[in-house]
Image (cartoon, rainbow over the protein chains, first blue to last red):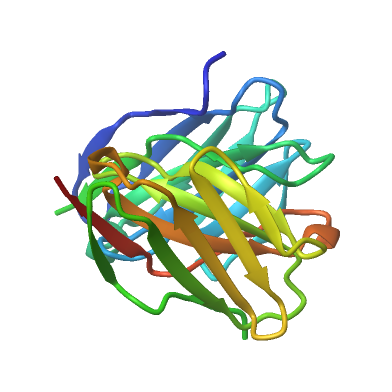
Amino acid sequence: DAGVTQSPTHLIKTRGQQVTLRCSPKSGHDTVSWYQQALGQGPQFIFQYYEEEERQRGNFPDRFSGHQFPNYSSELNVNALLLGDSALYLCASSWAETNTEAFFGQGTRLTVV
Amino acid sequence: GESVGLHLPTLSVQEGDNSIINCAYSNSASDYFIWYKQESGKGPQFIIDIRSNMDKRQGQRVTVLLNKTVKHLSLQIAATQPGDSAVYFCAENKENTGFQKLVFGTGTRLLVSP
């Protein structure tokens, strides 16, 4: 049983560019959440997708957007990258029926130069 | 506002000792708590969870205690091993909102010496 998988594992982008990160949830899970983890900090909630819609959003600007596909996989898009967007981006999947036991992927390390 | 904090940033123990990692939370409405372990370069790994209608839950070598009166959560690791060295996060959530938005603290680094 594959767990949560994210791609790519590492990425380097230039300020002002756009980036797309991808996530496949754990088998049987229908909900995907995205978190940003700065170095030395705990993860910060960006948003959550369920039934292909964003249903909850954290304190992040509109430059951060996402999408969920019919197979429950998800993408995180960040436009107009800033140096401060450099972080580990984590995807977590869960089952909406219980909203418990969120499982995380290994993350995508984004570096903005 | 909501926050989850940890008392100690680093905890150093000897192999074989028991470890206790503490966490304080401020949102009394939170009803679900999770402990995660994060090794360097990896995503958080689910360890154990507890709902607010419980005071204690045990897993394999781990025990989570919840004290709702003082809004305190702890993770006990028995017979700590070098492989337990990692950063540990507690996270909280309100289950009845219909969605999951975990609030994490900054983490405690556990260092296990052989």
